[in-house]
Image 1 (spheres, rainbow, N blue to C red):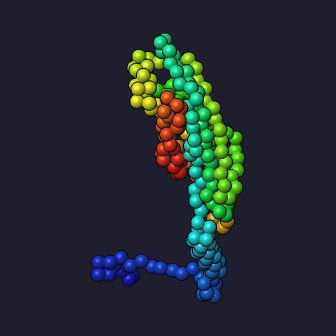
Image 2 (image 1 turned 30 degrees about the horizontal axis):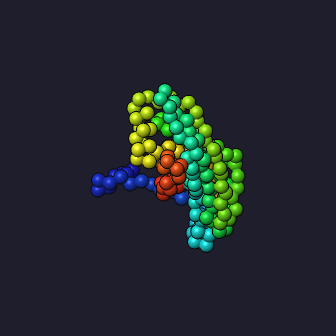
Image 3 (image 1 turned 180 degrees about the vertical axis):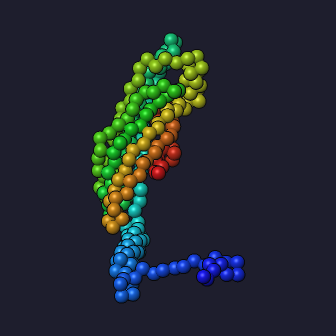
Length: 212
């Protein structure tokens, strides 16, 4: 009886699946054909994505603060703050060959950890190389401030700069031909700065969304 060990090595028997006449089993040919089709499909899809990206060169839509104005800003001796802000948000689609859809828009406006308002909007579409403006008027009355916060308000008047926090996100979706539909979240987190003496807005590059 021949030994299965030779020179310290283990010899394994291998066997090819064949039909009754010794030819390769049809199942092997079928599996090989399926794998070949899948491989070709992956290669073709990769070429389409690669070529489509350089032809269309998609750009992620953005949402940012186009303009704002501090309409009213006043606190009394009891520590109650009253304010009104007008905020203009712009949704921009820089793609020359694809429409963009904005949805799930929700931004929170706050001051000194006090929530003033939530800015929302229904789903809308922005055409190719176009933009859409959204105007909000935030009104807040009788906001209670503690002594430290009242001191911050007085200091804001002295240096003629006051800031409000704006934080939130929006979902963007657009179709880019052979690439299909792409989805991103536009996150916006910035400080809206104003001159309280005249209410003018101080633009900031940070008030433009970042995608993920």
